[in-house]
Amino acid sequence: MDAYEQITRNVSEVVTEDEVRALAESPDGKRAYVGYEPSGVLHIGHMLTATKLIELQEAGFEVTVLLADVHAYLNDKGTFEEIRDTAERMKEQFLAYGLDEEQTEFVLGSEFQFEREYVLDLHALELNTTLSRAERAMAEIKSGESAKVSQAVYPLMQALDIVYLDVDLAIGGMEQRKVHMLARDVLPAINEDSPTCLHTPLIADLSTGIGKMSSSTGTTISMEDSTEDIQEKVNSAFCPPTAAPDPDDDGNDRENPVLQIFEYHVFPRFEQVVVERPEEYGGDLTYDDYETLEAELESGELHPMDAKTALASYLDELIAPGREKIRAE
Ligand code: NAL
Image (cartoon, rainbow, N blue to C red; front, side, top):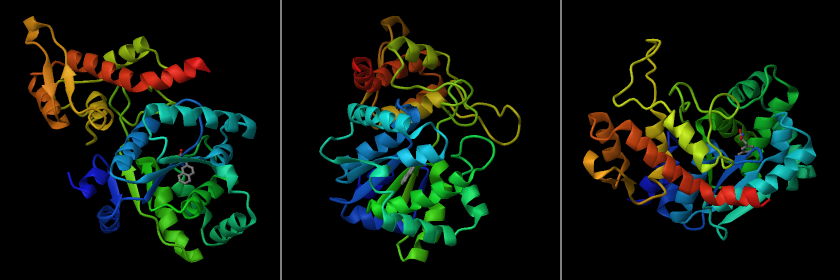
């Protein structure tokens, strides 16, 4: 796999391809980052971007993880003290998940976001952005129903952080794309370059395959889950043996979240996936790539129940080190 392919593997959107190709020519020492609102416990959404960071570290990138405490506060996630406490716990969990300790820098937003120069730059961005644009950028991030002034400031700070953290590549889930587009448009107003971005896919709701998996609605998987919790959640996941029919006939086919988790979480971290089966059902199946597993599930060679059993065990292996940390607290 060449560097460009490795960097863009499993991403939904590359902004722009030319810019990422230029980075891929000499990835060593380049810096990528992801920001997270500290929430205490890593869930499968955090793990998806973390997997991309691990792949980027393998390609030679340095990584910055921004623990966005001020952003979480602006998005109504608790008192500032509560948020600060959870940030430290999350850092430990990211390392347990497999981020390289030497190649990862963890930064708290509040370490630089209150400095005079930052605040003045922020006000300059506020002057250059309409309220409606800021509100639109937040459509898939904000909590609560009504838009608050704090939520208009939020995306501008996210844009500015990209400048202050001096990163070459911004990573985020697809729900961050409008914030990144706003950053690309508005940063030139303060004489800064537009950031290069990669957006990771959103995983569908585990039990229905409709919409996106979210910790606020429906089922998610987190580092707090026991082995049994994971088995139970994965076993009741939506996993049709063939491409699913469209439930509302609105042109949006259901996704298969079991396949998505194999593709975006398991194959990037394991060289080979073994699905164990008793001899009388044909014995173990071994997969070197995701595409073959998908094809065999769709042809019926791989039974959904066997796929789920294997998925639960690989997910458990990925989560186990972080779970130990949480239990030891
Ligand atoms: C991500 C978040 C907050 C601030 C950031 C600053 C720079 C880069 C990425 C950042 C959190 C993100 C979320 N908006 O929804 O979790």
